[in-house]
Image (tube, rainbow, N blue to C red; front, side, top):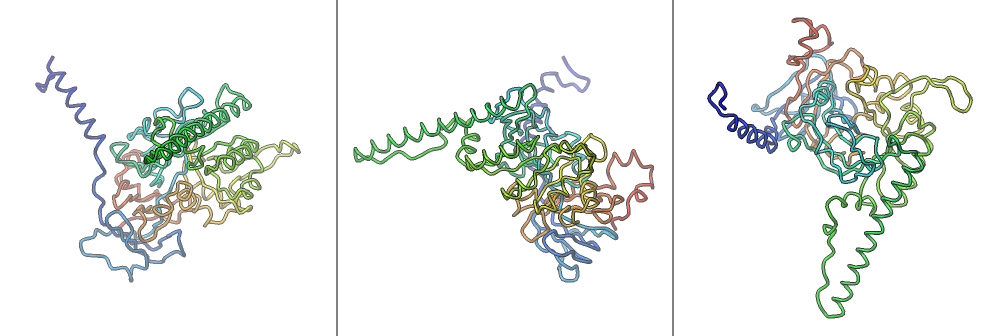
Length: 438
């Protein structure tokens, strides 16, 4: 059968496969050298810089400072904000959005990889660019026990490969599997970890026996190889050996206490993801020296389960006053109060969090959680050239994202946003924000 263009259906199928293969292997376009000048630069690594400039070359920040002191080569493209602020692109510490489905059906799937389910053309990633996220940690959801490993991506690119920032192999753990009570979930998790520890001990014993036998014969002992483990067991083995990191969803304070005990027993690094039902978490986190990922809803009213009194809560403020670092998260497609990261930061400030801590919760703190603090979270020489250009103060509700630059590439431009073009009539876009680009 031929199509109107003269190609057979078989030929079209082959071309489609070839194009899909090419997209899967395509890297991002080469990084562009770029300089951004703005009335204020928030580096998140020091005091604000008035009339500042950030120079990015080969995808990395080469210089940050007052515009009068940073020399811009003639060949470098320069962006000038007449009004506004430049700051590091935001970092989303944990989300299960952007995938075809957040969890597998089985409760224990430590071998599952989010990379297999991420959809590069998901509207979620488009919205990430619009609200200022430059880095996103996609994890399995909390409807699991051992859910699998996440992937750190940039919300831009034609393929998983081109989107990947890092593959740190962080495991997702939860005791909130639907249809499974907490006691059974604890048993299932303990059993999976204990079985892996037993298997590793047996393999270590066998390796020692072979080594001793070789030495007794005067032969060279065999080398130790972790790769002898099947690929589907290596991530769980790393956790049991204390070489991995787990993001642990804690629906209650008991879950948090259990997660801390478990991480100490096996030695793995722990990042708790707190439900808003996880009350009085601050003392536990402070004692354990842990930072936590917060639920997207930043403030709410509830009835105290102990006293029966109604009270207003802001978990971010509770952790801030206890000296516990935290990361702010958002949800795409939900109501507006949990969708916009800088709005979330402003809500935290309204409840007593310092502006510095609120912005850190979207930049430096999640970067440390992901082990990428040397690349992300602040504007410093040598770090990735990920810049967020805002029309005004980041904690002002009327400020908008003007541009998002990732490693020197402009991946979002508000002036060319098709969605805003539909919302605002021609000539109305500038009225919606407070700044602008020259």
